Image 1 (cartoon, one colour):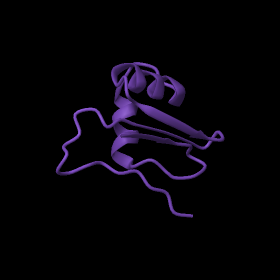
Image 2: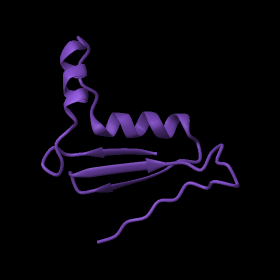
Image 3: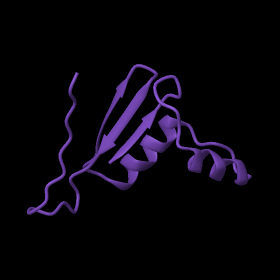
Length: 74
């Protein structure tokens, strides 16, 4: 499962911010991350909520005894 959120909704963890500052490579856009996830997970599903959030998930290699679930509560 992949979730990418706008900084307008949630602040990133300090550990991730610090790791990015040490990396010379440019940031990858949310759309590129989701596209890469879907390219490597052929049965993947994605959804975008405005410009604020993108989600992608797949049931590939899922254990029948511990299924992954996706839910939203408003």
